[in-house]
Image 1 (spheres, helix red, strand yellow):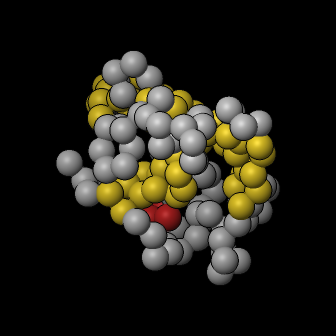
Image 2 (image 1 turned 90 degrees about the vertical axis):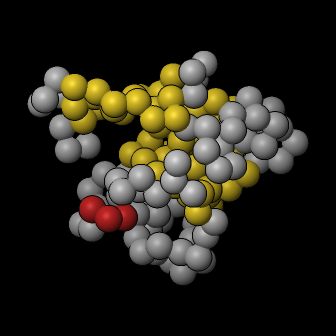
Length: 135
């Protein structure tokens, strides 16, 4: 995204961002708000016409309340959902039109297909959802 490579360290609970054009990097903690487990999978929503709505999505494991979380380019964080019974969220994917989010809860073996009630894509306008404070 914009000449940067994003990846996570599960053990250190960090998001590492490499700036490939400047040959620099920054690290950010993923241990904020309701995201207290280990970051697992990272999925970036590409192709948004509005850069303010481009979200970097994370799956989470190891917290007992694993979920799917997002981060906007301005650093604002949000929680999309929380899996129950300690299940690890995995297999995050989006439909080509970005209106469906697919994921699995590993311990139960259930695959989910979710969508926004307003019918907009997951890179569309912001919903009334729970945001994390930025630290």
